[in-house]
Image (cartoon, rainbow, N blue to C red; front, side):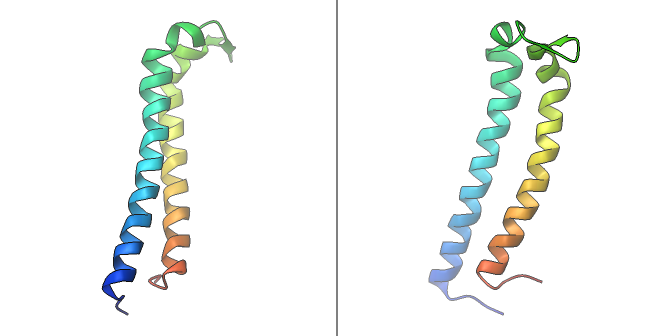
Length: 86
């Protein structure tokens, strides 16, 4: 099944919007919470560890895995919307 050039461009733009949104969330979680705001977050305890330390060691990985699932769900929904699903 092929898309018209206008629909293909709209599909690609929607896909890029999803990608950039999730990359921004991951950047904020990994770089922002793990490096930039670590001193402020370390004032909060999370399972006995300072929250900034937790984000730097494990939190960004958990968020990355959650973002992978969210990306799969989002792109499947986008594929159905543009009728290019499998």
